[in-house]
Amino acid sequence: MAERQTRILPVRRLNAAPDHTSIAEWWASEKNKGTAEAAAVTKAAEALRSSEIPVGFPTETVYGLGADATRSAAVQGIYKAKKRPSDNPLIIHVDSLDMLSRILNPTQSNQLGSSPATPNSNSNKIPAIYEPLIARFWPGPLTILLPNPAGSPLAKEVTANLTTFGVRMPSSAFARLLIHVADRPLAAPSANASTKPSPTTAQHVYDDLKGRIDLILDGGSCGVGVESTVVDGLSDPPAILRPGGIGIEEIRACPGWEKVKVGYHDSALKSKEAPRAPGMKYRHYSPKAQVVLFEAGSDISSIMGRVKKDLQSATAAPDGARKIGIVRTRTWPVALGLTSSENQSTFSIREISMTSDGDITGISSNGANSDSSLAASVFDLNLGSSADAIARGLFSVLRALDGINVDVIYVEGIHDEEGDLAAAVMNRLRKASEVAITV
Image 1: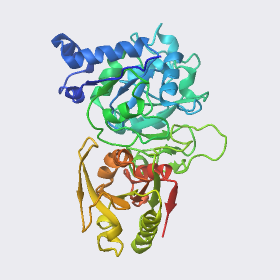
Image 2: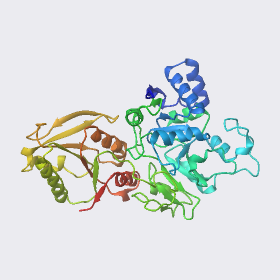
Image 3: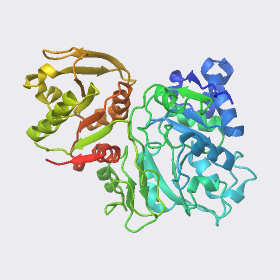
Image 4: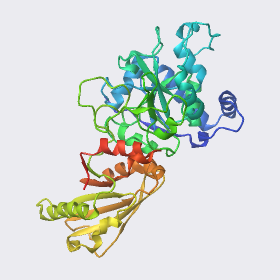
């Protein structure tokens, strides 16, 4: 059977909605103009309503792999394309509270896509505990856990046989537009091959899923760079099941969430229990290369000793070149100061620069030796010092170093007690790493 032809269609112009315009009005105007972007959205929406092949699309967090959350065959297409274990639940994405109400109250209309009926006294409502979070963080990178109602329109594959489902309303104007045009809630995990680093550009999606899906909508690079925060307000006390774009201190500032606890582990679950939310089970976010994470505050001399030992092993190896990646954040010197190493005659040091879309723009030499015929090469990249910058660039950096076939990646961690995105960054790094070290 011939491989599928995967197309990338540009939609970047639709990343921002016109001021003071509803999604319906925006779409009507765009469709009437007959733009190329409108044609791309129409094509994607038709595929989402009728096809079993998912669609790659941008959100503010990472690229999602979307399918109609109400059709089992469509949701199964996500698991097939990603090669994802079927006991890992999926988050659904809605464009409005009206769409969420139709999910929670399935008997009020004949079909999910119709206008909602007037709620009655027995209608299912969003639990009050979530009201302050929704008011502050929706639309945005926050997923809430809700009871799956009797007669739920959601495909059983979405919940992985749990009694709850996770839902969010993305702040990405384009994502909400696509959901509106499709007129279906979209099950949409990250659009990567299972366990690989999450995609923050359309090219990342193409690299992982070429030949497995038909269509990728290119909205440029994602602004947040890590997935949404997942919270469970149905437990007492409420819990954060996955750190992400919303920090724990921001959540604790909301009424009813002052005692929220951390309900996740940075390593994959060891037990056979079903994960309560995506990202709680299996090794995630992993490049081909071995990732060695040094926790914040690790002694620089000990780190240098570890890297030198690897370089010495590489120069003695009979099969020749070995490539080492170094990802710096806040305190490490360029290439860990290896330019002054007594071993610099046996390896080259290169500094990597990248575009905002995560592409390598140049690999320049740094130090006395840049001879590619030397026994080993060190590739150095500065990810930035702020949690925002680190989150935006993290997955792109891991993918870029994979692209030049490094064997091992040393990463400088940050303190995860800082709140905001720091806990999410370290959660992803610990899941990506084979070794986490404090020295």
